[in-house]
Length: 159
Image (tube, rainbow, N blue to C red; front, side):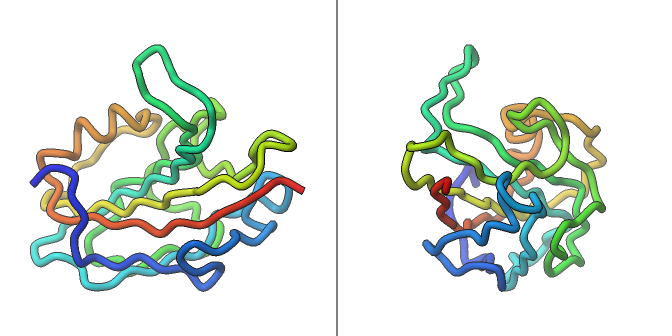
C-alpha cells in the first residue's frame, strides 16, 4: 500500500484539526501526551503505531530526515480505539530529544507557529517491535504491513 491516507479518522478532545494544542500538552506545560481517539479502522487491523512529528523545525539529520520527532508509540493492539492523556502503556521509540516517550511541542523562542502531525498507522500484523526505535527504523519495519493511515494536525507557538 505504501504511505497513503485512508478513511481512518484520528481526533482528540484536547484540540481539533488545525487548532492550537493546549499548553498542558507542551514542553512549557505539563508535557502530557494528549488524549487521542480513532475510528473507521481498516478491516484486518491487528496493531497501530503513532508518530508525532514537527516538520516546521529547521533541522535536517545526517540520514536525510527533517523536522523534529516528538513521539513514537507502537505495539498498540488493533482492538484499541484511542489513548488516554499521558499514556504510559505500549512501546515507546526514541524521539529527537534523545529519549523515549512523549516530548511535547516547544519550538524555539520567536520561531512562530509550528504544526504538529500526529500520524496513526494501522497495521495488518501485530509485530513485537523493540523499544527505542527511531522514526526511520519504525517506518522501515512497519511499511510492509501498513493498511491505513491518517493524521491530526495541531499547532503551537511558544509564549
